[in-house]
Length: 233
Ligand SMILES: C[S@@+](CC[C@H](N)C(=O)[O-])C[C@H]1O[C@@H](n2cnc3c(N)ncnc32)[C@H](O)[C@@H]1O
Image (cartoon, rainbow, N blue to C red; front, side, top):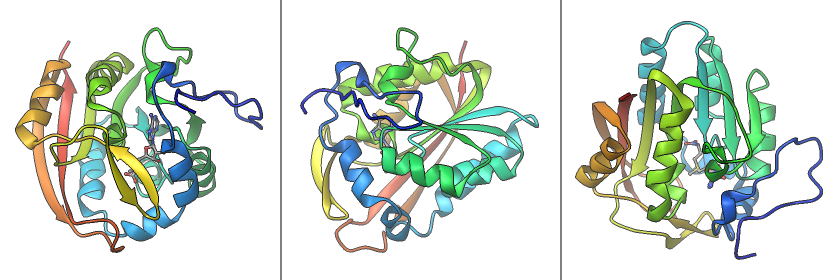
């Protein structure tokens, strides 16, 4: 398939990823195949845990939080549910959504494409006090990232918070081997990432980076960038 996909056999899911006509070839299939091995390859998520902890300290009790590209639900959706938030996760991969539902029964997960969440998209999830996107926007070609950031902006309530992580890399829709599969990833050098985020009307409040060596050899060491932002209205 060279465009976003629509599946007919959708089981109990009420939502169908369409990707607004964007090229998603192989992306969901790779994560369907990777499943729990993702958490085995990335067992130490120090930066991610700290980033969610920052959010937990900054949000009012019971806030709604959207986890974009929620993966297996671990550690983030679980961490946020345990902190008492109402958590909604979305992910393109059916396999990931199934795992997340099993790991974090206290959250709601939808199988959805980030591109379908925009104001003209077919799915309205309501507004959120915060959005997290840990290593998920890097799955989009660069041409789509400003729109995705705009969508995050529109999904937030005024002064809502946005925490983002990306791998620092100057690449666009670049095919890499990943846990026995091929995926396409994009990235920016840190100053460029900050610029793209600010251009989508966010104020960057805090920034951190972590050198990360995954536990599996076909994934090279990486520099992870974390940005804490607030919606500029
Ligand atoms: C690198 S994983 C990160 C998972 C999780 N956020 C974490 O940090 O543990 C990227 C996730 O984004 C999902 N994804 C990829 N493209 C997507 C899209 N267009 N819309 C929604 N989710 C997507 C993948 O299926 C995968 O679960």
